Length: 342
Image (tube, rainbow, N blue to C red; front, side, top):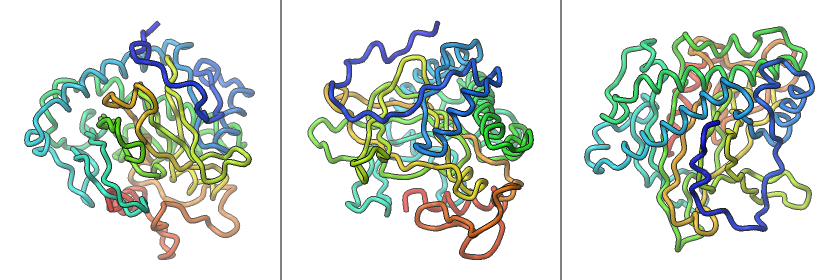
């Protein structure tokens, strides 16, 4: 069994309002277990988040090992001087791939607080030769074999979730999976993040409230700080903590799945804030894989969900809905990328 770095950290305080999200077995999902698939569908209709136990299957164990290895890569990459990291800045509105500095202010944050999170986005297309690659920092360039393994396994994990949702919704085999094909050009990527600690400022923000804009997000993090908008009775407008669990990924749906199902599935609002207790004094790293629709996929409800008024997704703008135009995923992702940091 892969030893989790969570075990080396001080525990989170007792008494936190923890998100009551499901724990799903990767082994059961791989086997097509109907009851486990129904639990995934229930999570996707309610919280939009769940824990995925990866310790109960060989494929899951391999993905866990990749995440732990990439944690070391992230620490090396972020340890470089600021000027060295700026050589790899992403081009806002042009490409999501490259380096984002901490200090971004998003209009979605009413208090206009600069975030304390920096990240490197590494394109699946770049590490697998689907598209010509940009240059990445030395630590990331050296880890290309590992990134190829992680992105392939992370994508397979996300597609496993999509296939469970297909079955649960009574859709044809491949209804969602065929919109998220690994070998086609897309916005799929691995993200390495570091959030700086704010031990003296409980109101600081690591990442402000947002929804993801792909299909499925597979997250590995070790230090606390992730919160999701509460759906518990009596806690409307409040936030629940998502406690990192050894051997588990945190999985959530993005806005593309809201679009494809016309609102039947949820992309829950979430944010990153200073971790409570002793963990608040630590750097918070995460390793993420984003499954996104391939560039030619049409951003419209799939068969069975097209009737009725189309829901609007995407935070500040609802790409396509206001222009009466059906965008491809490639076009939609560019428009959504423009919102990064704005």
